[in-house]
Length: 151
Image (cartoon, rainbow, N blue to C red; front, side, top):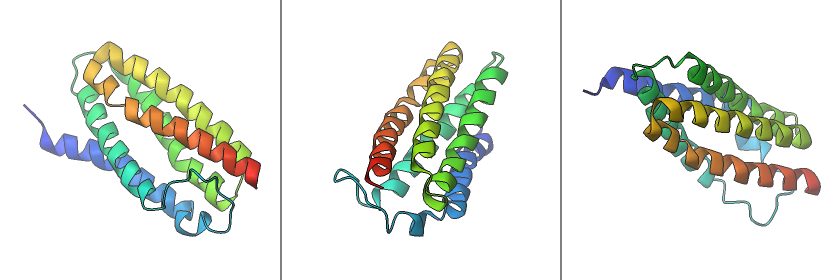
């Protein structure tokens, strides 16, 4: 039986943190005025991709919280990576610390891979739902590093 209120809350949490991160990071203005690699997607792609990823995160987290197994470790890793993810936008867009942001996203990738391993022990579907997130983070790392090189 799906607990809809809990599912919606789990979906809203990453979306709200991501939205707050984009506000604090001044994303709308932060990407103008910097040199970007030729493979940078159009600006509209980013909010769409992140919304989808945050929805998948929320569903995944819901599956973990509904499991009978102890999920404290998995959820702690989830929370840490989510906070680092939200803070990344501030360092990249506001401070324009491109190299630091690249290193930070690599740390986030490591945490997400660790999180996926922990999720897999509890619920395989929850782990699989995180794979698009890792792939997007890898792309973000490449993009971030190239922005660093160009600026």
